[in-house]
Length: 387
Image 1 (cartoon, one colour):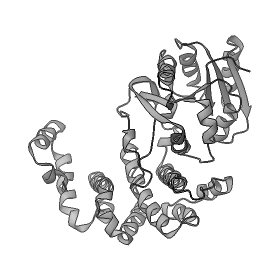
Image 2: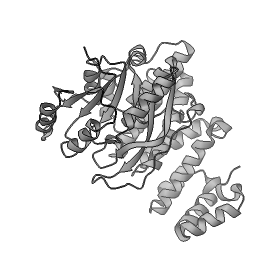
Image 3: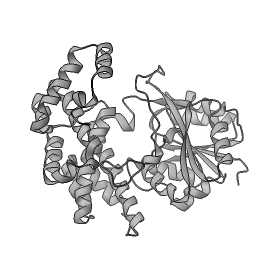
Image 4: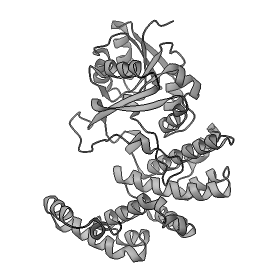
């Protein structure tokens, strides 16, 4: 049985080129009272040799090797060995600053009502150079499981530290191929608060092989799974039977390529009211995801979104969907600027075409400095088309 204060759980799959730097960042922590459990999820590169070389020189490292089964299976295999009161998560391609563990543990020990803490990360590219995308902390006081999309209780998983007893009470990670972290956070909230330290304590690597940034298909999956986990939270809040996340459900969802097909599979488990919420929520979430990633909705996605909006016009035009409407307009402007005018005009309501065209021209013609000056001078309604 481990006598350490922290067990660090890391899963890896074909990340050999990042492993030495990642592992060294963990071993170089100012707080040294930890055990590092690394699960090799069936890597076919040089990962095994690298892991064995580190384990040979540091007895705090435990290596588990398994057949490739996905991140949830790998992480749960590592968690099964944890005995320390605190568990830190780590991805195989990210980097922790030397004081990350010390500062996160200090917060948890000083705040017994908090069950999970994370920090802000810097973003880096595949070579380790600073990336242009900044990650900001979400306002956890605004969390809602029934907004459009759900406002998730999200904290950065690569920088996560949590209490083991709370994780066990929450049921650990469930079988979601993506958004498994958000699903866990919804359940952890029952046992205490979540917190984000307002400082950067590590680096989050964004690259082509990253699970969260690979393609529009992944974007659809993220949109759908994140919102079904929020629907699961709604059911628990209402005392209704929870949604079951099974291998069979994951298999069907993975085989479904379109947003419409994914929705129809999940709708089999939903009531009429849940179906309407889910269709609107996954539409809104896909557009939100596209804003942060290097892909845009295709013609089939746009058709599903427009049909969903048409069936739910009173809700879409209500105050509940202000963020959703802005996401529609923003995506339409990006499509117009990047040479997809048909998709842009399909996605946006006819009455907002002038606003879309004006804002597209505003972005395309003027420099960032001039646009910023104009925004500071004009009323918000003239720029964005709403209060």
